Figure 1 (cartoon, rainbow, N blue to C red):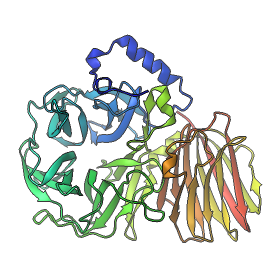
Figure 2: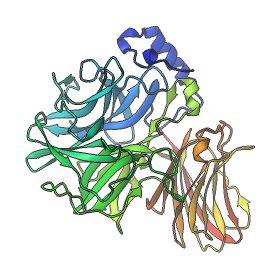
Figure 3: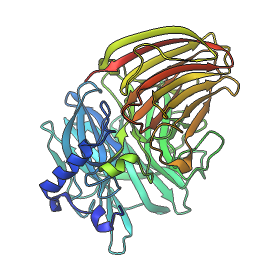
Amino acid sequence: MEWTKEQRYRKLSEVTEEEIEGLAKIVNQCPWRQTFHIQPVTGLLNDPNGFAYYNGEYHLFYQWFPLGPVHGLKHWYHTKSKDLVHWENAGMAVEPSNQFDSHGAYSGSAIEENGQLFLLYTGNTRDVNWNRKPYQCLAVMKQNGCITKNDSSVIQEVPSGYTDHFRDPKVWKQGDEFYAVIGAQRETKTGCVVLYRSTNLIDWQFLGEIKTELENFGYMWECPDYFELDNQGVFIFSPQGLKPEGDFYQNIYQSGYMIGRPLDLETNQFIHDAFHELDRGFDFYAPQTMKDPKGRRILVGWMGLPEIGYPTDKNGWAHCLTLLRELSIKDGKLIQKPVSELELLRGEKTEANKLVKNESVVFEGFEGEVYELFVEFSANTAQEFGIELRVGADEKTVIKYNAVTKKVVFDRTESGQSFAMEYGSVRKCSLNTDELSFRIFVDVSSVEVFVNNGEEVFTGRIFPSKDSTGIRFFSCGGQTNVKAVKWGIVG
């Protein structure tokens, strides 16, 4: 179905309750609805927004177009949790309703101040000729959950030298002052990030562009995030327009980070090392982080990508969010581990241990469509070894290690309904190691693989048949010892 501009920009107030109920019925009949991931009740979910801890709960918002699986009039939808695992839908949070966000409440962030949660976001507007004009807007949530928009935008104009691709403010506090980074595009059609400062979250001063060594690195940098960890500066952003290089930059758009010295707030200088992709899989974009009360830096991403059709589109919905990941730095790289609270999902436990030699084996009790799996491979002489998940008559999803090329491989060529094939069905990353572990979370239509305790991560949507539930372990050209633990998932 082709969506017209009028259909994409219908207001919810123009939609009948019967239409919403009908759409929800279609969505709930979808065979690929997730069980333990945040997903939209209807329509399309994309960027996570406003991730914060406030009033005794974790709050997470996301970009939402309620009427279908397309990018249309964006709202903020609100979900909240006490444990980062069990999420409660809290309903619409920010609705486009005025001259500053008439064509969408775009992405942004949140910060607590004076007992309130301040939401800073980009308001998208279009004129009669469909020319874009962005505004940076503010809304405030009180402890009772009520959200009120500021009467005016807090940053009215795009600074000279930049196009109207100017969005996604991420705010933090340093000392007595607030800072925000905003994704931007120079008039030369190259991507960058700019910096603002405020004393009250309302009046913002433009400090200029953050100076990096990446002068010509894609045409737009979306969803920037800056924080400090272990006395180092970490700069996360999602550059658009990178060309594939070997195993890198294989998706339509990328998300990654640079680690360096803390950002110099006087000179805007960020001295940094190389750009690293955050996730080596297929479906990951627009991540956002927050610091929780325990001092952990936690990341969540959109498990999807712009401008890609997904098999759930025909069921009236698209996308979900990733599981929550705790960040740390080791040897100049960000390590991403599933937050410890995810162990709350663990149900029945099944274990196996076997030397696998030039064969494919099945262990009793190892099957299912929703589970957590931990596998250690040791005493390896095999040229290749790994796991096949969601195995059926003619379906399987393969996670393996090639000891000859020293690469971890995620292959969804036969995972079920195919999509985005123009970007390939195999992802790889180099990893020189003698011992290997995979911690894998399998939901109805997704796989998240944490390699060697978070050294690398692969995220991918898959759309297999419901009866494809097998799990196989294999080795080729030698042997490997497989030690596996599987947990069922409980609500």
